[in-house]
Length: 376
Image (tube, rainbow, N blue to C red; front, side):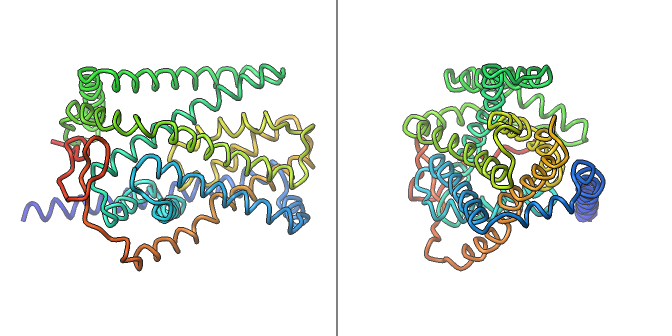
């Protein structure tokens, strides 16, 4: 009886938390689109700019946008040997649609991806390894792009103190992340110590929330090191190239959108676009709204509008909204279709596989210790 009452109370808290999160997200989105963006540019001017685009320009943009979507499928394939391009497309589009529409959608998207991978024969260990490694590589690129952008701005003499500060912060985080990751891969004992250290930090944070501590993070880090070394031994080049291409492709969608609405290179250079893209990508990592809705639009519009007149600001806001429609809104119906396809595509279904030396095998097995970390 006590367990049922506790479970009911926890369920109510969870629903209340989701409701509060959804309300805050909606308020932030409304404040940005109703109160802030119109101060940068009139929506009437923005709409007139969008309507002036030709069908060829729109078709080009959509083509670049679809290419951008497809590039991340190769990241997933590189991070999980045995996954096909078709499966990567279905899983990625479905999880992206959920992340872009629901508060806390990132976690729900991970759950949907895990369900799909499991149905295709990949066990918890394979899923966790691919998610962690692809996430690490994505974060390396996110942290590295501001550094590259700063270097280009310095070379071409278009840099401000704020950008220098932000880039140095990004550089410090990148170096720290790379060093920690490298230490984990170099030594089994160091990996175990780092896992225990991170476990203590997470446990302390959970204690503030009156949640039990985590356990076995040292053992998990040691096992993660072993499997990661085997995976990267044969796939690190493909994973690195695919991740770089994916991020650069997204940047190109923004650049093409700006040029197609009429923002010239002399008004906003490609280097400034790259700098704005790199820094807003860091901001968008914070789960304030689903898919960064509103926050990302405001970040791009504000960063790119510095030092330009009102007519160019309208073009910039128009380009940002078109860019976000292609990269944020377009994946939603594609993701819904992908999810329905997964439900019907029974021929892809297999029993979950186990991993040996970073490679999925055919027979079922229980997840490895590092893939099933849970509170004690």
